[in-house]
Amino acid sequence: MPKAILILSAILTASCLFAQTTRSDKSPTPQRVDNRIRVSERVLNDMALKRVLPQPPWSKDNGHEKGEVTVGVLVAYDGTVKRTHVMSGDSVLGDVAENAVKQWQFRPFMLNGEPLQMDSRVVMKFSKKHAEVVVGER
Image (spheres, rainbow, N blue to C red):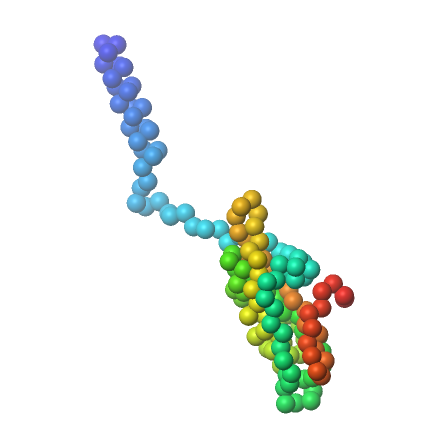
């Protein structure tokens, strides 16, 4: 009798272990969490490997020659620009700034050996003859 209990106990233990290690076809597949970190304009500027600035003329209309534009930017895990949007400023200059920022390249942001996406913004100041990135001057 004790031998039968021992065998029954071994079978139950093995079946419990087997049930824990096998995945059911109905269980969801693990998905990658969208890991991102918000960084300051200065940190984003320091991590830039390639910057493209717009070249004049910005517009044929004289009303769109000067101003300041803020572009929101999401940098992907590999350092490429994933998404941009104009946050403030003239719409024509905003489009010009956004098209330039889409061409930028950054060093990937690493935390504990894992890359993260960076969420930040770029501020560009336009004059009649040139555009410049403004970092922390406001």
